[in-house]
Image (cartoon, rainbow over all chains, first blue to last red; front, side, top):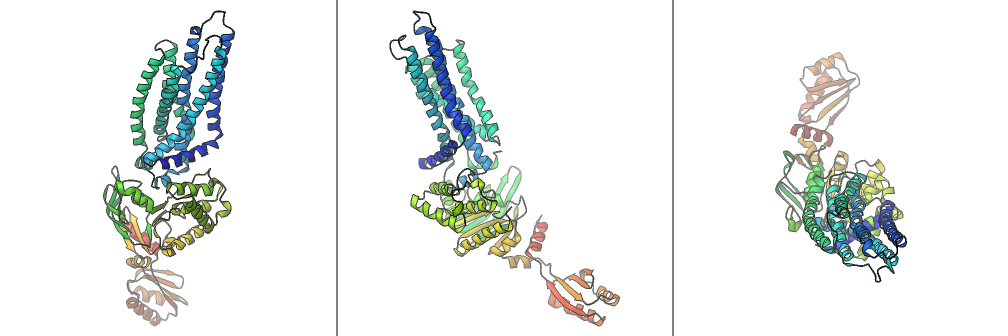
Length: 246
Length: 306
């Protein structure tokens, strides 16, 4: 595999994304707004708490907020992957691209990178803002920096990238079956539902989203990502694209 | 340069291309004619290694179509202008070319040189910074041709390059193909346009799932026994009509003072007709032998095969 080819395709798509306001705003506003909102809620909770309240009283809230960065990593790739793949279908630009010496795998990797890089950057940016805001709000309550902690490290370094990867792979499969960007984006938006389900399970105490559980979920996601990668590469073959894609 | 033998592609129970055997010579402009659904685009896609063949063999230069190891090599020495131009509409004309130049591993200086050369040659230099989506159909088509040539391929596949273009734009594209012909590029031209095929192509193949005929335009015209003699008289009298009627001519028809009939061998069959008309008192102004055109040959061959 020639990684240079994948990078050329990724940079072309990243350049195009910069000119798509809807995608750009989604990438910037979603993590920023949620980070500021969560930080503010933590700050409000601390400032309105009764004297003597310890950090353990806030853990429920903090655990709930930090998992949202997994959900963000599931939501954000959807509009990018939809635009990047279905956009090419709409413009009928895949055939000339497939006629170049670039392999199917290189094209898929390029498209995936174009969705992965901005998503991870936006998620990390949002997480950094949230952690800084929450740490500042918890200053004097904890006595040390609450973030980054083990759970947040697992979320940011394992779970969020794997979730992003899964979301991209699902969006590739969805994109092969629809004919317009909006439909792909809407269907791709549903991809976040299972991750939301995990969040709710954590909130109603069906599971505890501690470091161990997050590592187990990461392992399951890694296995799923391998399976989905196989499916998405099968979907993204030039023969399939030219003869079976709608 | 291109050789196929028994090349076949099936989609489920439907055979799109059936046992195609042909040879395209180096530096030849080869026209590929056929009705919609004849398998022209499928053939091009197979030859460009975009879709697999069901059976048969095909070779471009020294590379085997269908061999995974050779597929990338084939795509390096071929250029494709698909029936739909498929440009990146939001990108500028220059960036469209530059993107493809990068994918063909051209250096920055090579890209700069070739982008400028093709944009200037095709009259698009002034529009180099304009988004491809804002260009006219003709300009887009020219840009798509330039894109397919950016890596200096040995073989160029053109799928309906002048379809949906206004006459002026179509002429520009055709002139450019003729320019490429002078540069001895091997060109495989899918087209519906018989006049275009006749003017540009060295040889023409007619496909209707199966190969119907192959040859130069003249050869194809001669394969159809469709010549007609048209005799123009100063005036058509009853005596002349009766006299001609006794000759049992094929498909005889009258249009005013003009008689038209089919002939297989005009030199053999026309003199007795002329003598008969003169003896019946007719005054002949002109005798014209009308050969079958490529269009007539094409229609008859396709109909016969269908």
